[in-house]
Image (cartoon, rainbow, N blue to C red):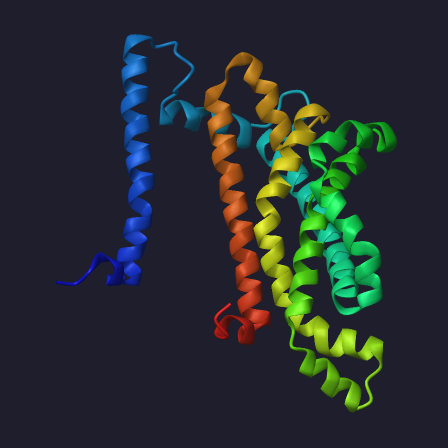
Amino acid sequence: MKRILNIKPSRFSALCLGLLPLLICVVIYMIASDLRLEANPNDKLLPSFSQMGEAWSRMALTPNVRTGEYIFWVDTWSSLQRLLLGMLIAASVGLLIGLLTGALPLMGATFSPLITVLSLIPPLALLPILFIVFGLGELSKVALIAIGITPFIARDIQRRTQEIPIEQLIKAQTLGANTAQVLIRVLLPQLMPKLLDAVRLSLGAGWLFLIAAEAIASTDGLGYRIFLVRRYMSMDVILPYVAWITCLAFILDQVLALLSRKLFPWHVKGGH
């Protein structure tokens, strides 16, 4: 008899199995929503899918009477701008710090303890300080994302740099490469796909910092809208926004995975 441990589903079976829990959750929600609305048609805790569709249509397809803007898309664009800029800064700074501290022992001995200490500071605890220093504008929100993500990426790239076989560095130096050439032509190409992996892993934290910053001080954005309408218990707005944030996070993750496969096929084929 074949053990369950050795059973591997086909691609189609894996897709069906992956969708099954989601479908079960949808069915359970529909049943619970129908029961609550049947008992109280004005219940706001579990709105029906038709109610959520009407709310989404109102936010996404109907212009605001005061500004003429489509609120849903304005919120989406504002949040994506902040998230992408913060992640770009974090990736750039994290790559630079991780590469230098991982490849240069003097840099590692000097700055590794500082990076470790910074990674232990809860980024959300810095939010009031960022608001005081940078104000309530865009800079503080982007800074929170960058500060929160950079230590993680830096430590990951540092570790990945140290994992590269020392024989490669010795061969490059034997052929006459100087320090800058070793960093740029030997180490950096091997670290770029690992940087994309680190960014993918840190996307969840990036969204967390973004939503927190927008909830506290903002005039637009997905997080701002969710916390604005919660005072009215508008679950028909909150749930579609949460679902949309989840979809955006999934799309960004898949885009980064696609970039990794297209730009660094050797990394994927190597089993990473």
